Length: 259
Ligand SMILES: NC(=O)c1ccc[n+]([C@@H]2O[C@H](COP(=O)([O-])OP(=O)(O)OC[C@H]3O[C@@H](n4cnc5c(N)ncnc54)[C@H](O)[C@@H]3O)[C@@H](O)[C@H]2O)c1
Image (cartoon, rainbow, N blue to C red):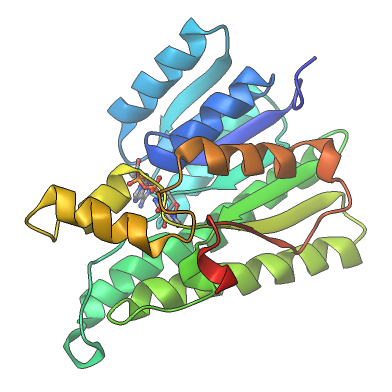
């Protein structure tokens, strides 16, 4: 039996990076996985791979910043599975670095709308289906960042969005606990993980080898993390092994925040 056998999971941002890795691990451990992403082609490719390894699931278009998109997605999950146990909110973006007086309101809103509104809207609609599930046994896992715990110059919108995800997740956890609803909510704080999003940030250096050396040197362990380092944390929080864990922040960062 897999560690999440029989559970239904939705993964926003499931087409790439941490979301795709989480979907593969959850499917391997027995969950039906719904891969939801702006990039429907990418979500379908990851799903095909999962099905090729014997997994089960569906792919769907989602704009995490748009409430109607969440409503459509949750209606589709309700129709197909009738329940929801695991939600991984991994859809995220960044606008690049800018000095605060140069940051545009458009960039601020773009980052907030995906990283923070997206987590709020996802959690809101996921929770409604989790609450209607029989039995109720839910785990919401919001992907924040070490950038939700510590800051960097020029990353104000990203830092603010990820800090918001951290405290929002704790409030959801307490709301469910107070209501005696068997749904847990936690945040994960990845350090620097080798994904397309990080590669985009590294591309601001002209020399890829220099970029690699700079980013490796930022990590106390001397190298970037891999998507599976985060997916294994997702699996723990998604499974019943973590049934007493709620309102927690799981830091997986090669020691980045230990300094
Ligand atoms: N890679 C890292 O080092 C790192 C570190 C800390 C936190 N994170 C966070 O992890 C999450 C995943 O990042 P990643 O590195 O896997 O990036 P990624 O770019 O590889 O994947 C992000 C996915 O989100 C999707 N997406 C973006 N906007 C969307 C929207 N509005 N609606 C639906 N889908 C949307 C993209 O299409 C993409 O498939 C993000 O929230 C990111 O902030 C990443």
